[in-house]
Length: 151
Image (cartoon, rainbow, N blue to C red; front, side, top):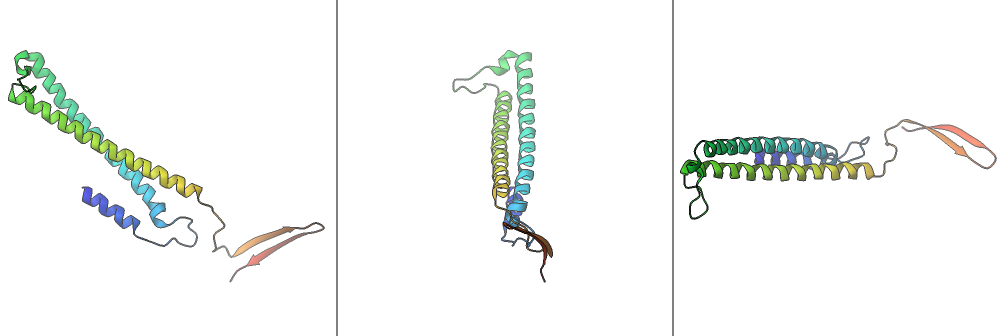
């Protein structure tokens, strides 16, 4: 999944030239939306991993509530019962996975925000492909109005 996401990013960022009417290069124009989509996907994956961790921890809590001996700790700090230790380690693994997905999602959201701000902050001028452009010139004693036609 990571390789596919990386491949999509690389394909989107390949140096495509902007069209004449576009103000931003293609990597900026489309990369920001790719990062937003990636951020949403990573945050959904984080929510799923967090839900799995909560479910396993609730199961561990039910085991401990039913029989307190199942949650006794050994000398090294681990659960003495193998199944309780397995549930705890799986909970920790899902929490770690959720944290990693969340950090990735936030980094992608930050990258998208940077690209949005960068695109809005760029100076914009009129596009070069407008065939008729009105001209107004105000002088000290007269005003000239005309139309420029490009071929």
